[in-house]
Amino acid sequence: MAIFNSRSCLVLSSLVFTVLFLSCDSSNESSSVTTVSSLPGNKLYEQNCMSCHGKKGNLGVSGATDLTQSQKTLEEKIAFIKSGSGDGIMMSYSKKKGGPLSDEEIDKVANYIETLGQ
Image 1 (cartoon, rainbow, N blue to C red):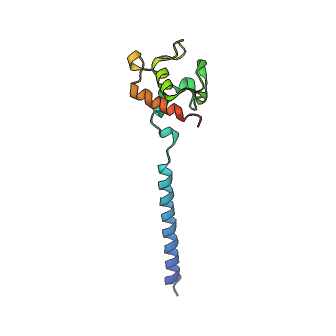
Image 2 (image 1 turned 180 degrees about the horizontal axis):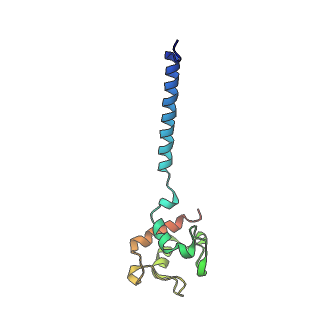
Image 3 (image 1 turned 45 degrees about the vertical axis):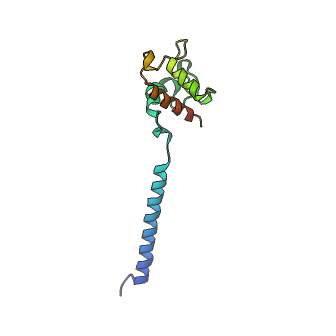
């Protein structure tokens, strides 16, 4: 006497196929979701801004602005990062002014900052 007949094998194989299909589908969905840590500018932000502004942008060390509450436009943020605060609290990050970042890198950081607090 066989433990599995052809009908039970069909049901079992259908069940296995369904489970495999659904697990493949869900892994594809989760890999297409963009996380904040994978956004362009995240690593640059971590290297250059996080020590004062914090991971979420609201740490406020040494008088740093809460970036999650900023009302500046993207263009104003880019200009501010390039030139610094002028009062010595924040340095200029533009390579043209002795800082470590290129204009392209500053654009990435500013765009990343736009995602903070959302």
